[in-house]
Image 1 (tube, rainbow, N blue to C red):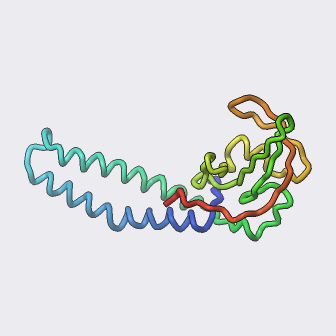
Image 2: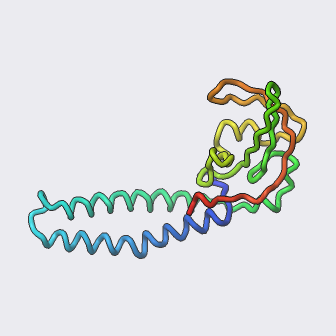
Length: 165
């Protein structure tokens, strides 16, 4: 079983969602299904079918969360050295052609949000950066093609995962 690194806040949010679904939502949907069953003919009972669909989606989410929480490896990146790129590192890259600066933070798959500069450890870009250090050169394959970057800085910055709410 492959461990999935994540921040404590992410682990807590996923665990709370899983608990809510298992202890609260399951009971509500079961009650709705029972009430819909009492309305008679199930073939043409829209409430029953909607509740069964919702139940299926909820059970799939419970299965997914159970798997992720079970494989979670909570990491506090503020305690790591960040001399080399690792989980929780913020990496400042300089495009060798345009000299444009870009910044990414390496996070777990559930925390990933490329628009906010949060890239998953499992992504090809993060895998190319892991283990590198300041001064190294890295070639990244982007949608726009291959680009070479110089690693300007590797550091820890507080990670904002508000998009998980």
